[in-house]
Amino acid sequence: MPERFQSWAGMAQGGIVALMLDEAVGWAAWHAGHPGVTGRLQVSYRRPLKLGEHVRIVGRVENTRRTLVYVTAVVENAGDRSRIADATATLMEVKTVVDGISR
Image (cartoon, rainbow, N blue to C red):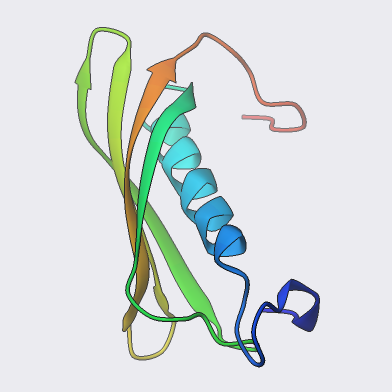
């Protein structure tokens, strides 16, 4: 995590972590064939993200119902897998393409 995202000394601003989770749920839905926009994102912070810490971010579609996509995501330390934050989200499915992505 670069220093430009610092909040308190040595820690990343929490909104950056929320952004990571929002991207994770969006890409998880995209790769599962359900691209959408975030309607609700509920974030639980488990501990501060340290500047310079390497992370692993994972999103997973849990369920779909009509045009709603239910997704979870986690941000964890890349080495020891300690949890930094997690989220649940509801996305509203839209028919779209992502610019710059060729398949």
